[in-house]
Image (cartoon, rainbow, N blue to C red; front, side, top):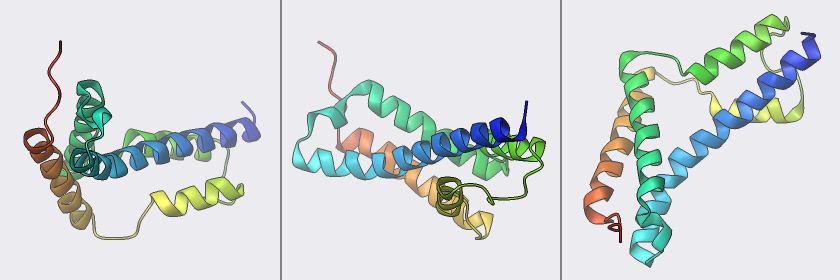
Length: 132
């Protein structure tokens, strides 16, 4: 595969990774806000299970010190293209700056665990609607 294709695939992974991070982050806010404002979709079981599972995986990865597989895939693609960092296009550069951070890992482990706790609490406060 040529370098341009590998970098394109790395950018696709970065966009998907960013979309997932935004879903997990803003999904928590939307669940609480939607519960307060009466938005029906925040009580959807599938939406809530996907959100909970995603946050649980992120929190577990963080506690265990495991890098996200999406980060590994993107890095491998960029490495295979002999690309160092985000020298590529505008989107790749800025999404990378938003998604990747330079803080102590323990700070993020605590934040992920807190978000997971708030998500679990939301199951009691913003109840999922029963089937049928």
